[in-house]
Amino acid sequence: MTAEDTGIPAEIGPYRIAELLGKGGMGVVYRGISPAGEQVAVKQIRAVDFDAEERARFAVEMEALRTVFGSRTASFVEGDAEAEQPWLAMEYIPGATLRAWVADHGPLEPAMVAIMGAVLAEGLVSIHQADLLHRDLKPHNIVLAADGPKVIDFGLALLNAEKVARIEDPARISRTGRVVGTLVCMAPEQVRQSSLTTAADVFGLGATLLYAATGHYPFTNADSEYALIRKIESPGEHPDLSGLAADLVAPLTAMLAHEPEDRPALKVACDLLLAVVEKTGLSPLEARERLRRITAAGVARQAEPEDGLTPTPKPKREASVAVSHSELPAGAVLAADRLRTAYARGRRCNRVLGPLRLVTFPGLGRWQ
Image (tube, rainbow, N blue to C red):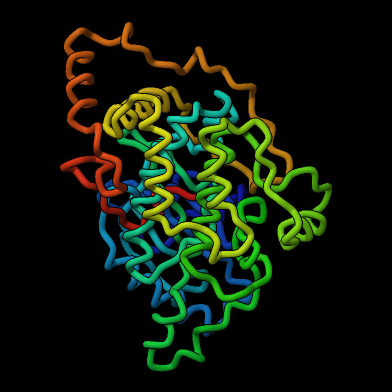
């Protein structure tokens, strides 16, 4: 495989590389094209320090990815853990990342943050049921696709301890040896390199929703990576909730609790977020459609740098993204009113879509 002057490889596996999509701590993501013309997102893992143990884990994780199906993430295509630089390919999902959308349009209104969180929480439940953790939930890894938000970049997926214990030679693949993830959205126990549970992803989702609602991350005013680590690790430091709407304070405070055992399970978090939606008078289906309309204004996704400590989103512009009944045809208003009545009791997490209940698949449509 030859590299062009730009440093972008001509091909990875069977895929011709068309462009760079993004870079992260674990690797680089490209848009690839198959011999038949199908577009995929190809993540090439950095080979530095990627030893036999990590290759073995990577291979097992790819097999686990094949077992989870759903609509909130892209589907796994294939991968090669034995390549000189291991790689995997996922369905390509067009759309702006949440990070890019907020930077361009400003924070989302509370009900839209809440319905986004409920949808993503419901999707993450299925991922966790496959014994996978994401470990790097952040605004860069949420794509605002045409049919709603999707989680991407499961190149950091981690088998939980119980799954590792069932592998024939667990000692061979159970060592990670370094902190993996993005610091600004990372749970305290992940920074400490402690054993991780699903609560780490609850924290990551909470941090992502805080950014969507305010344009900033849980721990701010840190002038260095070291200072940020100290703030995250300290039980006495509390997340910065400045600018957060009152209705979102309770659910996000719970999701961002310092100790993992104090955070709600994803299904409980989903219910807390749906209660925020319900207070606005919208049904989950109405809120999802409104979110889809709002985020449809998102710009085409561009390759973005790794996240920094001081994001600078544009000021909130509610008028530019609001959708009122006056903008909808009469028939749509009538249908919405009927749906609101039909779903007035649709508060439980598994009723986010009513009869079209969401299931998810931990794919890697696009990475940041």
